Image 1 (tube, protein in one colour):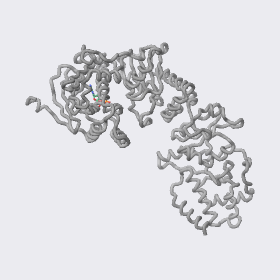
Image 2 (cartoon, protein in one colour):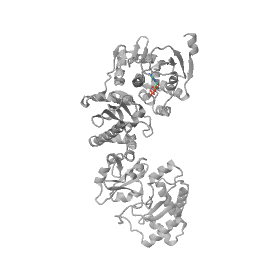
Image 3 (tube, rainbow, N blue to C red):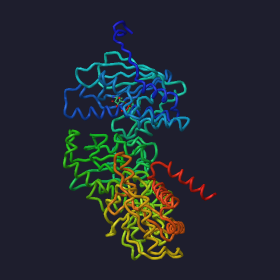
Length: 621
Ligand code: ADP
């Protein structure tokens, strides 16, 4: 290295987070080391896509006539590996910024959490976190990047790092645009300098890269647009491979759909549903969704305008002839063509899910389990397709096994002849819901109740209004139309006079804590229960509102009393002796707070517990 070059060499320290990440990669990624090649090829392909796109409008670039390709060279004896592309290249700033920082927040936490669960991390995971380049440190101790940006006045740079705490950058003479990455393979990974190895890895992971990949003089990948082939020629294993390629997933997809349309809009698409949802599906905004191609040229690798938000779990490609090649992201976004494709695609995807529900229940249930929380929100977002979406909703009910789900159609078919409403109850989990005393009447009368135990359900179901002319009704609400019949095998209920007087004492004791105290028609084995007033919010919704906003005012509940219950009858006896009996008052408070506790609404259990201790002391005297 010459004098001047040494002066020109600058050293940079990785940020703390990057250092930790590198440590994890070097010491914990053991399985699938071969993905380093997939990651490098994919970066090269991205850089080539970018330049192909820029060249459409900008002729003032370096090497405008260069072949767009990826060139790999290996030297078995020297254990050397190199990969070079004629892509966009990087400026010095980009080298510092793009290589060397953890782009996605939460990546490190996520990887560390995975690490503490398992002994070793799967190299396959790394591409999903935007740090794919660093997987190269699985197979080498030191990497060199030489790059030159495609702008005419750009300079070449050499970046070097041992993947520990720092990297260096120096200016070099590089006549051509693009990026070359080279390194010496670690002894235990020298196989990656074997031709057959490299060939099979490229075929496995990168066969669908739409630029030629050469190993020496031979082109290895097939550069074919699978979605352009007729449906019956798309082979199962090709589809699986293609899916893995576009989605960065290592599992096979749950299902796929090929679309070829000509008419109002012309496009071909190949869509997939991944078998499992990514971590944090509900938050993940950066997730790659659909790639947009125009006449086989990739225009955008993550085109969110193609499908509505609630279908963002769908992966794959859409290729249209209806947009100009040089369409910019902004223009694409507001183009009427996109709106049309979005409409058609949405209805195709919903049709696909309907088919799946009919023909492959197992797959549909997997889909619903993985994506339900996101998908269901569609009913509040997409009014055009609301009916279709409602038909695709599924729920657990008081008559299904845990985990078994049914459609609203099935619910309505199973309704009793005189049942006019679709009943539901919401809460945190199935077990808690099943213990809710408000269900007693429904169980006794064999009425099916939807069990809503996902947070999103309470935002959706109350707004559904009705299904097949049957209104949705929360059984926590006071105004339920319940027949006043003596429950079979039940106890004789208190006389009207005694009831009236006892309910007065309840009201007097609970004062402002409740909206009202009334006789219950829905209870069978519990003495009391809390229900929401006629115009009150669903209790589960209210809990969520309170979680989001501590100031949110609590609405008061109505306490319903089971006038046939032996405990209530005992209280009535106490009441006849003296309506101010402290024991009577204590019991009333205890019943009220117990019901609050069951509802998850009791703020402090202190009074409840000390009152219970006093009552036990009394009882054991
Ligand atoms: P990701 O590809 O997920 O963004 P990487 O760590 O693999 O994460 O790469 C980081 C960034 O470095 C890329 O986004 C790109 O900007 C840049 N980069 C990597 N390889 C190349 C390349 N061959 N040509 C141009 N830029 C590259």
